[in-house]
Image: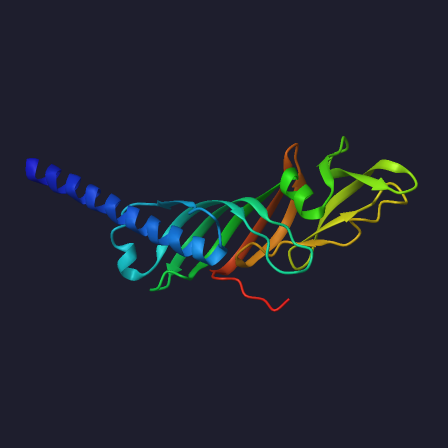
Length: 213
């Protein structure tokens, strides 16, 4: 019996070591693929993990990353915080790319980051589902523009139903390019501290972003 207990304990320890190594490799692949300044936190869920790296696939992985930079030359936004739940994650041998069969993700866009990216002072409006922006107009001075927030195709956030005639500064949608390829924006909610965007995806790829735009 003592030998069985010792063997079980040893297996658990070795399995946790394997999980730690898998988490480190996944964090490296994600950081290289998304260009985050710091490595994300990664948790490999389930037991045992020991047999999963040998197959090249991790069954369940949770990732939390911060400060994902905006990419592209069109109007884009950085992602303040991205939390991702992945099923069947496979990393490449050189750790610069990772693929997942299915993903649920949540991106948080703080008002501070929104304001910096758009050049306006953005905050939550008193009416649910709306934000307000302070705009300085040559003839009218400073005014507050109220806008509804909604989802467009191609991972775009739209600012619509502008409440004052002068408020055309956010008439064009903004694009979320700083998210993994294959994720699709499903909803966006206005909170007290920022926008809460939700994504889903199948066969999602994390790899270095390249664009001629």
